[in-house]
Image 1 (tube, rainbow, N blue to C red):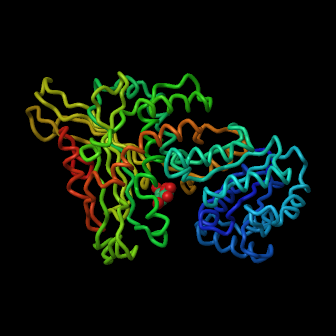
Image 2 (image 1 turned 90 degrees about the horizontal axis):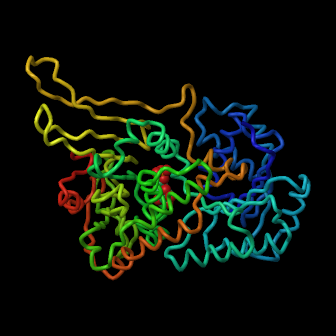
Length: 482
Ligand code: BG6
């Protein structure tokens, strides 16, 4: 289970992602015995800090983000002992590269190096250029690119071309943390390890699919970034399309990374393009206005931003996968900030049986709870036990997915070590990024040109009414209305 010794070099090591996700994930992997004792983590950032000051920040972060019962004092010290820090401007050729090279040279030359870019994507090419020029990239090096990979096909291409000048595709790991979620990985197991589900996973039995990622948080301190992105770019072009791919793809021949990625790519290419003049019919976008979450009054998006904006904090899209398996099955994808509750889930609505012994009976429903309260539930029609005559009622089979005695693994945990293992199965290939942008762009263009109305919804609600109408046209309802 233990991976080979590695050096993890993090660019953006003082940032929120490193403190909140990357260091806790590596600590958890050490706790689980998967990180060898001589592995090293080298943080770099422009902030001038000495090692002690950086370690103090790392310690604070772990104390904050790891539950006390899993933060063992000896292990914490061991983990902190693996960390060093180099003050470095990754984009400047004159920066402290000598110190980074010296740090790395104390490891054997053949050691795996993972360069994790937790910085703005516009910097990736310049950092790679410097790593190359300073001869820090080795054949055993890989770079991990955080999202967003661009804001359009063109800008994504520029980033991919830029990084691709210095590394071949097989050394480039584009992270999508949704693929790291256990419950998302589980979609393949549920579909392909259960003949019961596999046999009915098609238009013949499935009426519609909905994929939701809703959050209670607003845009917090990120309003200025978020306003350049919006819900479609932030969540749908990447995370939710990836989930859709896993739900819709044909069975890959093997679990080899490129087999799975080919199967996902085929779905992305089969997504029916939404022409700009159809965008108003096929999508709903909205901004939250002031409201209340968890009994606290919160301001609206425009108030937080302090100016007018054409950026959506809610997006719902009706899309179709044009393959025989999914003929005429609508896929509804939605995401929201400041929703009533935090929920990421996949709802598979099976068709109702019009004629059975019992007349018309409701369709079964499978819900994959991605987070929180991870699990799978299935609605079944059974005979009501009180009545003598046959009358049906619906019961719910509920299988929680949990880890006995441990915290549920965070999405970054497996991903960080898969990069060390050299297994890109849960990372996005360049052609997937492109195909996802091709699909998303017509929506984004139509929205930019205000060809679809900007609806509003009160913070703390499930979203605008218009989103209900999107489903009602095909006789469907959002899960909370079922
Ligand atoms: C990130 C988005 O990729 O995913 C954030 O940029 C969002 O805006 C986050 O909050 C949601 O992730 P999760 O794992 O909490 O669903």
